[in-house]
Amino acid sequence: MTDSTLAAAPATATASAAPATLAQLMQHLPGVVRGARWFWWIAGLSAVNVAIAMSQGQTRFVAGLAFTEIAHGLFASNIAVALAIDAFFIGGFGLLGLKAQQGAAWAFVLGIVVYVCDALVFVKVADWMSVAFHAFALFYIGKAFIDLRAAKKTTGIR
Image (cartoon, rainbow, N blue to C red):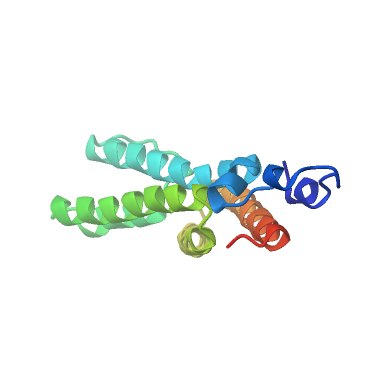
């Protein structure tokens, strides 16, 4: 159900049918939940990329984070530091996914800002497939954020 269907609820609906809490509102916004899950995909595929890098593999997922790749490049001689940076970014995106799925608008904003910065790294090295995927994911994350804000405004739920 989109925010437009929340706003266009029939006048005969009872007051109990309208979401009263943020958790109830999120149940009415599957598109927002799907948008929030993009953070989990980014975290998961970045973790797979780290595992591939650790096994000296030559392939990677374009959805992964440039920041984890940079960490392995800069700290090749100190893998513990690289893994700590990996854990920070992968865990951070996992947490952003959880909070965004719970309806925290700040999680969408922070995730978008970090993922845009990550995309700019790929722009710098002209990895256009990764840039394109980042743009694709950012579109759906941004759409989810906009839908969440509109639904919160419509319902008055914070």
